Image (cartoon, rainbow, N blue to C red; front, side, top):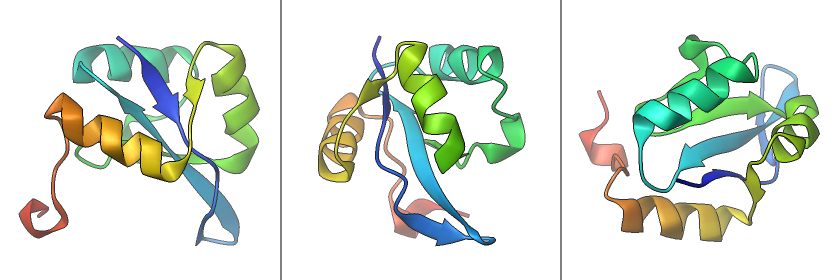
Length: 88
């Protein structure tokens, strides 16, 4: 499994946010996020929203740093992607 994080470019709540995903297994993604102190409430069906200040720590812990396009490509390829129209 590879956990991936993209650049924090998404503004919300006065901060910039990145996405944390797995390219193969949601259970391992949840374990990684928990071990890094990312709360479960940050999970949005196929990814975690993570604040910009967490990104260096996530990379140091083993998350691969990729572009947003690469993160999306790999999430789709994994079969774990939840399309916007399928979100509830």
